[in-house]
Length: 107
DNA sequence: GCAATGACGCTCT
DNA sequence: CAGAGCGCCATTG
Image 1 (cartoon, protein in one colour):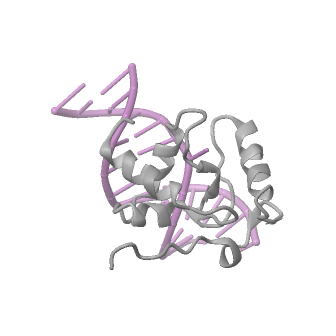
Image 2 (cartoon, protein in one colour; image 1 turned 90 degrees about the horizontal axis):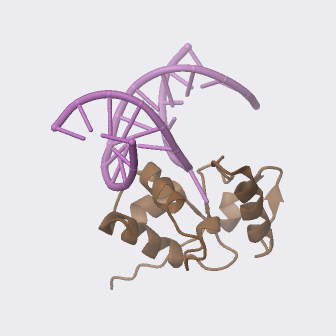
């Protein structure tokens, strides 16, 4: 990875369970980078193919898939999510229903 | 080291 | 309801 910042982001995304999704802003906050959703997107964009990071479970604040460089991946992401029982309502999904709710690790 | 870019988010018009 | 603008920060030329 390119930096410790990315490592934090990846660590958070890896914790997302199957059938659940998280928003960029949410991941940013959990990674200790409140307000920097852009960095999350940037970090995911730098992810190598075949990484153990379920990047497809990360969507924007509307519950939709953000337009990336290669259009094919956007469609693939939607397909992957649907394969995990996540149903899309048009171009977006219901965050109220699928948003990931992480548990506090610290205790 | 400066300028431009980028898988976002929120507010205003 | 749709579009445009501004902020935030790391990576790259």
